[in-house]
Length: 287
Image (tube, rainbow, N blue to C red):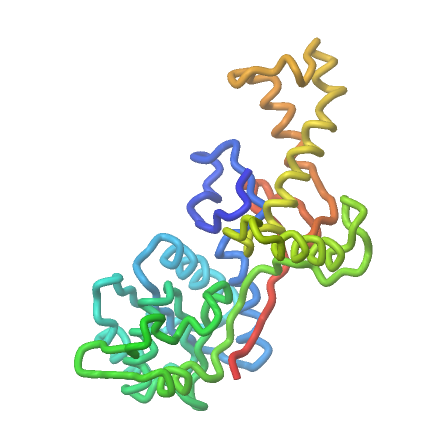
């Protein structure tokens, strides 16, 4: 079970037969993207993405979902980390599409928006929809040099102007529900405990963005093991006796984890037939 994997490829059950994750797949935000388009009556969109499996597979899923909902995808283009996205953006401009869904990591995103700004593809007449898990102020060059791509240069002020108004979607990492979770603590109480720990001088602060998913993954493991005890007894096994290659025990663990449903820090924890987390998405806008 993974607390951080978002790759859509891991949803292929025939390949990853025993895999579960408490962190939703990147494709899990696509329904929110479609609903946003439907809410505002947007009938056309363009898709541009960095050619990494995380983004290309998410784009493929989005295109299929768009067609099912009567939304036309006019342009689908990829660009590598080394590429200049200029030609891809020119194609989008020629298509006269105003809604642009983009997938990228921060360095490539800065180049993309700098080019888009100089092509007039940003501002109130265009809507950009991107991932919501990028770092705060991801559009600002961390070395303070601004963004240079081809013959275009964008300082911090220009980049801030370029990204104004975009929508972003991400999985909800801390539930806003008020009732106690499986641990007996509410999500806000758990977050307070986490922050108290992180304030200690030698506290480990790495991957704090995944702390809630990790916590829920540990609970999923514990509940699976606990619920398997009686079934294991039926085949004369105890948890203490299980070895790595025990296929009968594996089948029991799989069945129990597949049927799990509990309230965790990240919300309701349950898995679909592919082992993917059924999660909640948040929609935010940069203003």
